[in-house]
Length: 83
Image (cartoon, rainbow, N blue to C red; front, top):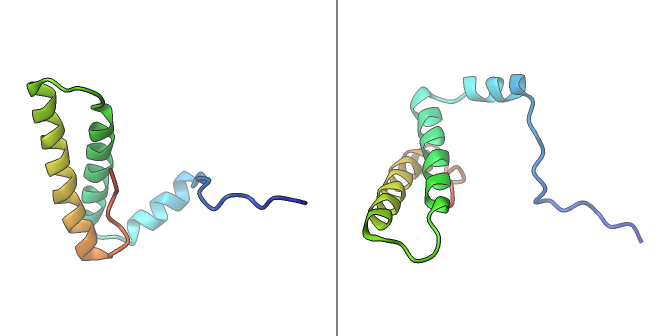
């Protein structure tokens, strides 16, 4: 029996294709996508018991992610980034 590949395996996108896709989106949506991706990475950085400073930084990253996701969701419902 041959197993089919998982649909969750990420496939790399060539830079020229990514640039073409990006040129079709408004600039504010592209900026929101970058901000959401950075904020999601920042949220993942904080694990385990957190001190007060780390909790504040995590909350700040969650707020930035929420702001960016609002812009992305307004443009298209499937665009928001999940933490």
